[in-house]
Image (cartoon, rainbow, N blue to C red; front, top):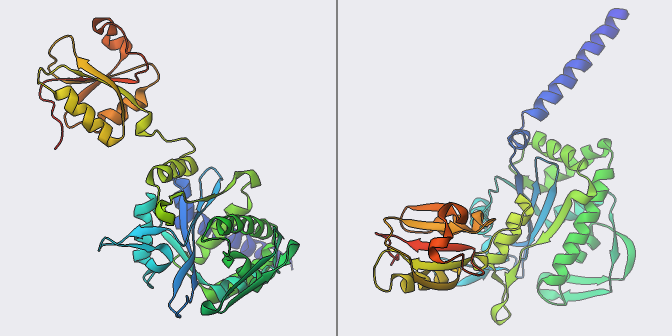
Length: 378
């Protein structure tokens, strides 16, 4: 009988090695091993007022190689431009073509979305029921009726376990306005759902996977899903971030605020605050001997969003354009230099020797000295 025990042990070791190999060879694991974020677009579908499928819940779930997780909510009412020059809300831009919808959001966010998860509301409710509900503190009584969608909501306040149907109503409630409250509730619910999933024993994941296979459309493989689940279970709670897409609101309509969006994306996925052009203080000096060149360059830079403190003439004619920066302003100098229409030389103030110009201009981050051949782009 001893040989049977050895054989069984060998088989178990083989299975363990095989599972390890499969986990480590998934596309998700390979991307994380390369130091790349993994972004998954999540789309919750609704039949809409006239039975036409709409993207009622849209978000991006992301996992970093360092073990951070981010959920970014995209408001369903967010309006994006169309080819004919009109604007349409996000929920209406989904027309059954998930790849095309994904490409629009990749352009908007500036991040790749190689993976997509699409689930209808019946499937979402079934997934919540599969984990035996989610405990949420309902902040106030939520009452809402929309006969066009067959939606009747009446949820009382207090701490309670939401089943699939009630959880769906909690997320869809928006009687107080199009989005702000709904975005907050989405973040609260997803945080509670994540806590429930993290505590879920692996034996229960088989049931969850079965329900998901019946309701979820995704290009993630089973092994990719398991790899993400395994990684997500190990992410500390303080390393999970829930954020919402920032938007401008001209005339009461939700339009993209691209500057704030850029700030948010860099903050979420790069862990740093991005540099905004308006924060770069520039002084422009004419070293090319061309009349009004400094004035024209000033107007051009302001049009690009930079702040121009002043302008004047350089001490002589320069054969090439120089970008001179104050101590600690290297990044700001790079932002100016990368947009100039000619090749330039970037120097620190100590390298250049600002005494020849009478000292460093007060408040300036960058001194742009226009050399021969410089021109303002038309």
